[in-house]
Length: 321
Image 1 (tube, one colour):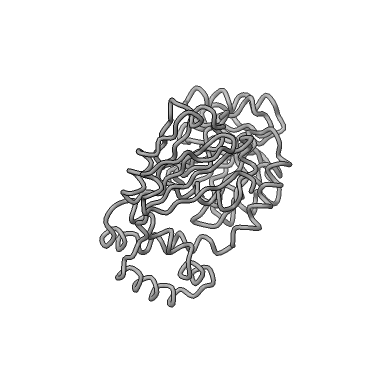
Image 2 (tube, rainbow, N blue to C red):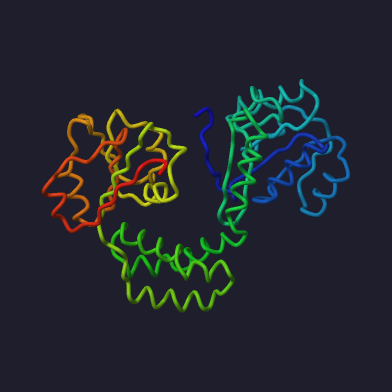
């Protein structure tokens, strides 16, 4: 990755924006989503910037930029059309260890601002590392179509009852399974539809029952020609909820990117065409884990008595089918 994605704590931001034109106005409007701790440096401001300064009570230094103005800041944004000023801002920020962004000059940026989908407190940030803004816009449109405006309500609900679930449901994995059932089921639908009281009553009943699905399983996914773009919705969903994944060097490593990040990864030194590690996969599944075994190509599974006689849930999926 050329850029490392990170979310900064909003109430710790102290931002200086140099410029008083339309570009500066857009940057101010964006930063106002998380803080009003903003200083604007510009001898002259357009009407939009002046209105934002007045309505949000921002600090305005009504002079051209000079050295020494950013000593108290931790983020600097240069939004002027003066290359000399922009370079001066970047050099001073660099000397002070302050993150700097010079608009439309990636060589003078310690960070870039992603495209943001705001479903507060849920935030989706998208970036092409500055290479293709049009592609970012297209992807953003696709995600916005599938992400309900009320999606943030799910996160608020989770925060409200997090401690209750932690006290009642023992074990990190069991709590994850419990929340997955909540958000994906009828209660999640009620939350999204604004039926908060009904959702809370159903949630309390569910919490008392505390019937998380602890059934283990093994899913073999034949990756065929190794193109992850051909993953079916069912295969993609299975990868997202895996507790453990087995793979070898013949499997396209891009498939691993689709696996839940905190799932255990078991690299197999011996290719699956030679031997499949049924024993280890079975041990994990019989302990209640959801196991994925990625296989390159599309080969028939060899007979294994322990696997065939096990009562765990078994499934085979073929990439693209």
